[in-house]
Image (cartoon, rainbow, N blue to C red):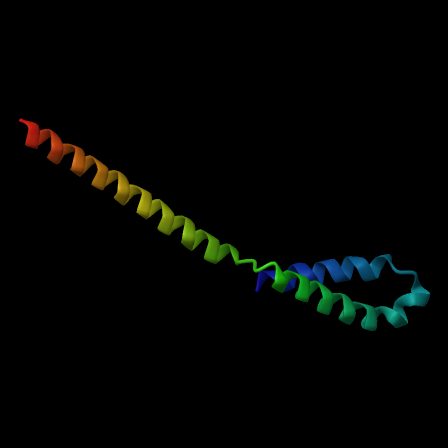
Length: 82
């Protein structure tokens, strides 16, 4: 998952900013931050980019179908009045 890559980059950058004396605490800190961040993201009920793109495609298809049906109804109504 791409999110893990972003987490890894975040934690790598974070650990590089720590003073050398605090590196021994790094693993505990990273573990706790990961757990907290993961729990927060889970509560946010986020979707992946792939899931989002699929829903966008479904919505575009649905809109097109609706426009086609509206045109068809308009044509039927105009034929009915003729």
